[in-house]
Amino acid sequence: MSIRIERERCVGCGACVEACPGNLIKFDPDGRAFIRRPEDCWGCASCMKECRSEAIFYYLGADVGGRGALMQVKRDGAISRWIIRGYDGATFTIVVDRKQANKY
Image 1 (cartoon, rainbow, N blue to C red):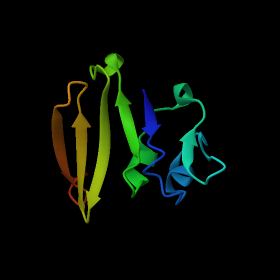
Image 2 (image 1 turned 30 degrees about the vertical axis):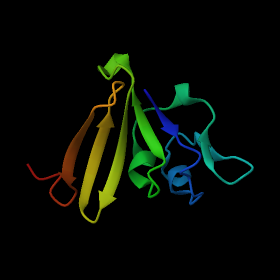
Image 3 (image 1 turned 180 degrees about the vertical axis):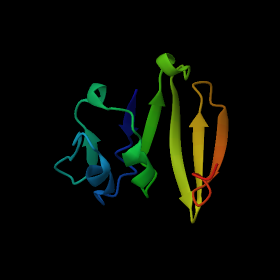
Image 4 (image 1 turned 90 degrees about the horizontal axis):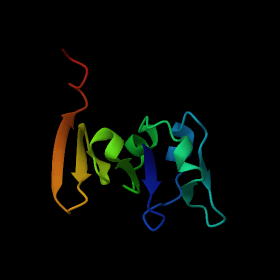
């Protein structure tokens, strides 16, 4: 499991660099984020949750039943939308109210 960073969307804010517990995300010479060794990614999704430019996708490989799907987080106030785009183009959205997420 790993992340993918879309260079064209990255605005170079550094939120992902700060959020990565493995110190795996760096800046390229143009000031855009990249992950040097995706295979070292822990899959924690911290960077993806912090990215405001929606440039980071989580790769859902076959090992987690994703068959190459990509997942992305979009935030709107207290609401997070976890959007899963399948390899076939189909999308599925999970809506999470972050204020209620830890209530059981």
